[in-house]
Length: 242
Length: 296
View 1 (cartoon, rainbow over the protein chains, first blue to last red):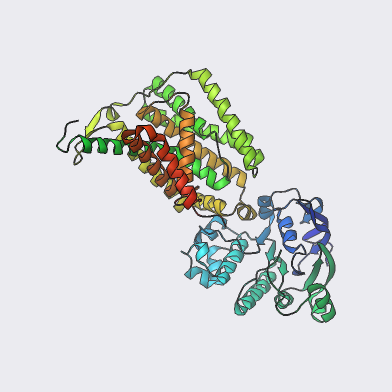
View 2: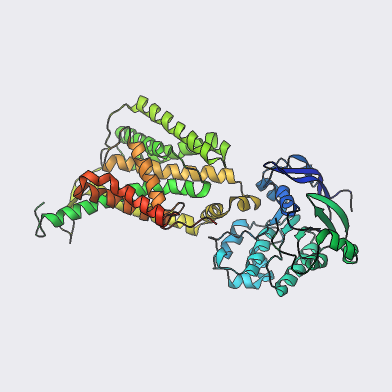
């Protein structure tokens, strides 16, 4: 990985009440999309939330484009170029599709509302619908579209395929590929190993709040033992995250 | 008061109109309170003090300039400014700690009440009405006479309600506020400086309260204690109607205002009980309020 990583996480600790959730996490994300895999409750979502500033880290640094953002509130991190597609999508239930996009859209930049509609024609059809009237797939498209309108440098996606039909999962995977070719870096948290391996080049595996392995996606794909040990991949294992 | 319909009917109509008048005032007072509660989960116990401040400032301005409209405007702006300071200077520093905010806002309301007592004294003030709003009207169809200012108050509440609805439902700022009510963290993660939005909403709530204060001082009167009266009514209105919803505040204000006046007229001994009976029933049957939405 490049030394001048876009996002660099050094010795990140997170305490949540009296529990110690993240233990000295180290990660680097450059141009190659990175996936984070791990079983439930291993700290993946907590890591996302800490990167976004929704949990204050208790130790360590988060360097984004070379400067430490770990003291900044979430809104400043978003303005600095971190896009966030959270677990559970977190669509505003009392806003229409159009309003979701309109409050975030800015003049200039690569992504406009029209372009989001071009990418997700379904959203255009549903643009008058309120957030809580959308299907899971539509909500996921909206969550990604709204994050892209910030024209982020790095997109953090937390289990974007959770609860989606297989056809939509492959749409999401294709989209992540497209986003990458536009020069937007991707950090993808996934339970769905196959989706993750199809979407990213590198993977990191989290166990017990630590990153225990970092390797290429191909290497993990070929390492059944590793998959079984850290991800416990039996059918039906995938479920809700932490 | 002698009409063809007989005394009972006239009394009923007058009491109903009084109930609507009170409902209009309660709505003006509670809408800002509800907005703040809905967005920030802040129970702003200084809301009544903001209302009384607006009323006093409005009185002084009308007394000096003779312009009622200017009085309503300055009362609203003074309370808006005070509200922004309360949020930016005190409550904003304890965001997310609702109990502490509630206690701090009680302290602020007591301090404000004492300062106002020091400056304006313990007198009862009534704002002098402009020519057009003084006197009364014989209402067509109903056949009862009623004070112009009270009729104007109902119109004012209606217009304010519609304007507020438009702001919340049809503008970009309104969409941001609704998004904040739904999910604050997500709104921040999309780059919105929530603290500035909070200050703005506090100012808006103060504006509504301050204007309500001047209008209360015109249609009725204001004195020390008016702050607590409207704070209490706002609390009940929001509990009954549901927090964070303009429609809920309107419905809650209607129920509470009418119940209070009917109670006063027909069962004076138990008058005060009706309001709280409504509140208890709503809490038992629909704890999120009549038009409120349950938390996820």
